[in-house]
Amino acid sequence: MVGTKPKDMVPSAAVKFFGAGTAACIADLVTFPLDTAKVRLQIQGEAVKTEGASTMKYRGVFGTITTMVRTEGPRSLYNGLVAGLQRQMSFASVRIGLYDSMKQFYTRGTESAGIITRLMAGCTTGAMAVAFAQPTDVVKVRFQAQVRLADGGRRYNGTLDAYRTIARDEGLRGLWKGCMPNITRNAIVNCAELVTYDMIKELILKYDLMTDNLPCHFTAAFGAGFCTTVVASPVDVVKTRFMNSSAGQYSSAINCALTMLTNEGHSAFYKGFMPSFLRLGSWNIVMFVTYEQIKRGMTRAQQYWESPF
Image (cartoon, rainbow, N blue to C red; front, side, top):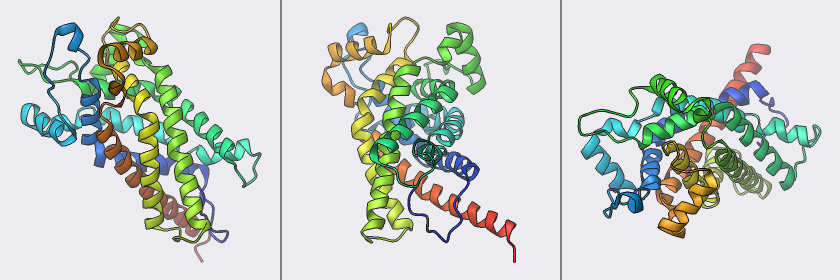
């Protein structure tokens, strides 16, 4: 990321890798209920044509959260948290932690990076993250989407049970279900999120609007969250629907998108937009602010360790 002063010790790739994963986990702990509400709103309406459902169970972000707490208990807001933390530690470490390294790779080690280079770096680390950690995303979405049955039963009894059940019933391909739409989504999110944050922060520092501190990080993160939500919502809804679908429900991600368009219209692609924005906006703020502080803290500790006197 931009903004490091020449006199400061530059954070190593290991610091960025670990710091990004840790910061993302902290951000997930804070914003996970919003993410769960987003998933419930995104899958709502799937059964309207096939099962004749006419009533909407969830209405709005806080209405969804209230309904879930009332009907399923407060713990339902954190369904899939374990898989979510596994996902963030693996996803964010790669897609965010390796972003600067990938920029340097494309610029052959020089400091100047244009918009095309940043987009290429974002797409590359976003795709790499999905290749490594897709199963954790599938399990997270399945847990967030599941509703407690009348007899108290659940689709999966635990995180490990979910991995085993999906692999047994759907094969190893089931754990990578929705991989292509997720690569598309993650590449888009990564580009919108990291490149927007990078450029907003760079402009703020260039024109001396703020110094490289918390208000600057907050402003850049908020802008990145809004831009990311606008760009990524359609593919995010398709990804969620496809990964949560039962075997044979959709033949492909494109079929899922076409079915949504036919049955629910264009607005279906922006279902859950407000929780998506609230979640991505708040997630970006917590993640980037925490990430910047972790990088600084670890770099100073490393600097002190190497030169204690």
